[in-house]
Image (cartoon, rainbow, N blue to C red; front, top):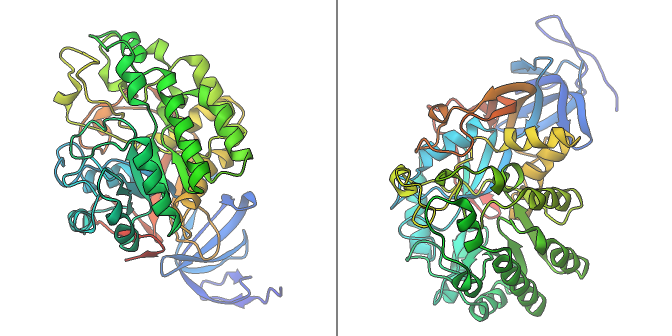
Length: 464
């Protein structure tokens, strides 16, 4: 490739072989490329990355940003597991607040779960209601999952054609009556339907029979709550998903893996060639049951945060590839539903609020384990994007959306729940010291300012 010098008005010499001008140029010593962290200049036009050159080539842009020495340009994170809850339970979380929180945490794309909004996203009509609620409110790009519930098999193909990214089902009560669970046979019927148009079934895998027979949660003792959601409930349900995927040839995905017991059978299923993917979440990788105080219902989620030894095995599962990626499962509620006065784990809503904190949480833990930033970003950006079929997301490379985060990996902060953007000020991470600060986030080549919603609503295979 020839590097013909082109003189520019400012007198600097550009070595851009095209001699072109860009809307935005970001340059720095630390740009996370597909070949690792390198000194690069990134040229953006019309919201898309169109040029990547060695640092020093002086790409010409209407706006030129020089990264600070301690900053790394990383691709915007992709979080495929977020409960926004609007419409219907907007007081729990809404599109404006959720996407502000996402942007502040370096997340530039979320995919919204089909519950706990009312109506849930189980028909095209409901999807349209959800999209109308989101329109003009989103600070990041937003896609939608569909739901698989008893009796809506005929709705799956129309929802797919309307652009949902796949379908979520529960194998036990979801927590809200308007999104009932499937039994394993019903799930298998729907999996067969999904194979006809190559969609994916994403599964909340806990076995209702095992939980029915477990001790009941009682009061403020987290240990009693943990005993009420045993690993065996997850293991049984995951085994069911694996075999139904084997029988149908369907793509299947295990949501929020918390039981490390399930890793060997997931590993062997993948070795057998099943179309199986697995996610876990920051709370399972950074928190431990032993450390949860009495009555601290902000830690309650389902499946639950388990013991320290379990956490170590989940990290091993990530490192060996059995677990494919990390997403938030951001599932907030109003403060009263967390029963903070009594701290009763039996009655509190189960869900952890962490959308804004995921990158710092995982980086804090990962760097102590000697893991590279590139690895963390792959787990939180490239891999979830690939899973969801978001082909223009998750990498800094020509042709990809200019969605970036400027990340200061060696900076630090203490979590203050009152400074988080999600709607209800409660998180188990309040007061926790974290490494890594998101200094700026770009969507389609523009800085997200939390004032002007520039996010797009995504359909599978295209944007609006």
